[in-house]
Image (cartoon, rainbow, N blue to C red):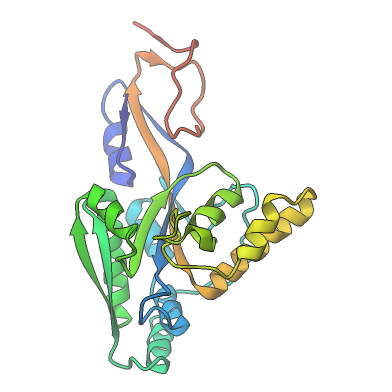
Amino acid sequence: MIYGRQDQTWAERISKLPGTKVAIMAPGEMSVISLNKAMPPLDDIRVRRAIAHSIDRETMVAFKGKDVTLPAISVVPEGYLGYTSDVPQYEFSVEKAKALLTEAGYPDGVTIKAIHTTLPGMLSTMEALQSLMRDAGINMEIEVVEHATFHEQIRKDLSQVTHYSAARFPVADTYLTQFFHSDAIPLKPTAVTNFSHCDVADAEITAARTEPDSAKQLALWATAQQKIAEEVCAVPIYQNLQLWAWKDTLDLGFEVNGSLNLSPAITEASRFTE
């Protein structure tokens, strides 16, 4: 059994090998770019909105593959308890992006910098985003470092743009707490992965954790997602599904649909066949 590259070409190529089974399974890993509001020019919401308008999600899904990728609408992945699609959205528009940059005082465009990992799947995504942004007058300079260094440096709050891909326990609180509560901002004692320095939804995120009324809890999570999208703390790109392959002589004993440890489980029902 092997873990696959999260792109369409890998799935198509491996599925053609004799005696091979391929699974495309949930949960997807959410791919998001966080925009560091503490660093100019990203402290200007017009620049952040320009970046959001410069990204064509349909292009990104087609780039990774429609069978292995889901478009991302909110900063919480679709399918998670508490997810809502009722959030401000920024349609792909080079014209709107350029107009916002001009309004912000950058008629000739703007340069932003990103520290990024050498991991091929993530790097190819960042390079595709770089190309899309360039058309709107946004020059994203990418400093490529090996993966451990990437994690070290983004946690030192050194990157203006941080591309992060992750799957978490499927409840909205997990993503909102780790990526968008101010307690999770880098360099704080409670730091996790709030690379955008987002703090606009702290009240809702905190209240939802202990709200006993499920309807009120869902409403709090929805409001948090709406505030984060309005502030453009981050731009959701897509969800990459998990790809696995194994020899057909391995009978797992069940149909593979999803797994919280991101891999097919080997259980007492699994066995080798002749």
